[in-house]
Image (cartoon, rainbow, N blue to C red; front, side, top):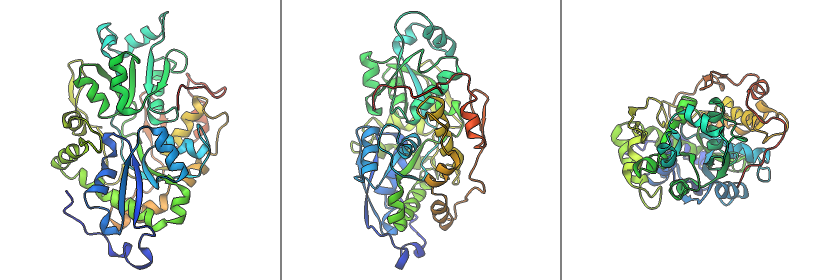
Amino acid sequence: MNDTLNPPLAWVNGSDAPELSSIDAGFMALTDSASLVVAATQGFAQPYGLNINLHRQPSWASLRDKLVNGELHAAHSLYGLVYAAQLGIGAQAKDMAVLMGLNQNGQSINLSAALKSAGVITPEALDRRTHQSGPKLTFAQTLPTGNHALWLYYWLASQGVHPLQDVDSVVVPPPQMVEHLEAGRIDGFCVGEPWGARAVSQKLGFTLATSQAIWPNHPEKVLGCSLEFVQQYPNTARALVMAVLEASRFIEQTQENRRSTAQMLSGRDYVNTPVEDIEARLLGEYSDGLGNHWQDHHAVSFHRQGEVNMPYLSDGMWFMTQFRRWGLLREDPDYLGIARQVQQLDLYRQAAEALNICVPSSPLRSSQLIDGKVWDGNDPAGYAHSFKLHALAGATPVTGQ
């Protein structure tokens, strides 16, 4: 796939050569693992003197534990996973690092065919159903501190549904979501693709909302590692970022590149699902299972001239504001100080500039979310406390790890 292997020689010779010639990198069976998988398998890493050994993980909790204990050098990671590990939420605290963003957008909230048959096909109908007497609906997400829990909570709250009181929340690994939906163990889920598309294609559910409708161009997966890895092997970390940046750029150069990436990801060693379930939403072509079809202008993106890959301080801080909002943190952390430690801005800037990839001038960005609130990285504590629906009083137990 890679026809343009021209790395800056300054980064692969002499003292700039990677300290390690081979690293172990984890990933989950998701479409948004694409840039790491492409970097590892399509010749983008070798010119930097690096070999990336991929290790598919069964769950985000497993990936987190191996990343924290050093079994994996780096991984396709949830933003929330990295920051929870940094803060010691759900596991022993470990100084962590975000090397770069891997993608924006491309997740979805999906409901069951049974709810569809019952007419629960709009946010208003879901709001009515959750406030009726009787058994609570059960929604699955992929990790209590992960992105999908936070997208689910944010979206439900924006519709007037309290995610910790009005519904039950359980943890299910991404590749098992459709199976759980089919078995009737859950009424809906929030997950990365292709599992939302898979539920639609199998007529087991429908997509009620996309994550990009919650926050257009939201931060999603990152290239995560321990801070120790960056400090011990800075050249290796930079070489890894450069390889993944080149792969990210390659995927978005043409629609054919996206299609060939979908074909590769469908293989048994990666996502292991029919290419049709991956390709359409990777190309931005959505069908929701309710008869609606559209071209999504904020579909999953891996590069966008570097806008996707910048490890913005404001992106990292946002996840901490939601930990505080939902009681996963009992007190406000040093939002900016922690983000400055985790987000590897200097290393990213070195890698991007060597590849002539534009680096945004500010480490903060401004966005308006579905509820009308604007997040720009200023006053994170005030932002965390500003929501009508919240659980700021204390830690809230969530099923599963």
